[in-house]
Image: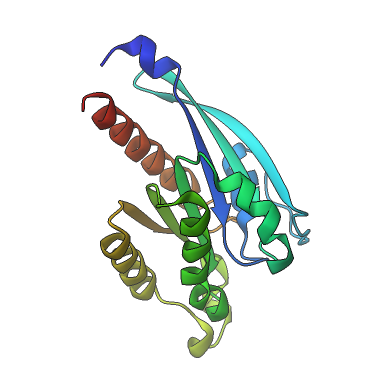
Length: 191
């Protein structure tokens, strides 16, 4: 691989999922800006960029945080275009957000025309012990969803459970996704 080409790589990621599942908190945690306990709804879209090192090179990640409210679908439609990966977030303590995960994939597919590599994040694992069992989404359910999603859409899908509060698995998840995007980029360059 020509190192000069890798240096110029930029990937656009879109964070999608229901409102209040922790998309913004995950983005903030990954960016190193910490966790804000008070929920502030994203109005429309927000974005950040991060430069990460990979094999002694710098890769630019542009992360678009899309508002989860239905009223913003029209606005979201513009930000799906040209994305390199979809990061679908649900809350492990909000079964409805998990049940709505397929709806988010349908929306993304509609505006992208096919899905890119994806990362499914079951967030808020730090709250799992505080909830009743019937409200909780298990790790196995999340893994099964990601596997079915991957098989049906014929795209690589990663799965992680995370905590935006503690930071558990946030960096690992984004590192794995970055490596996957680079691998796919390299394969396409050699075709």
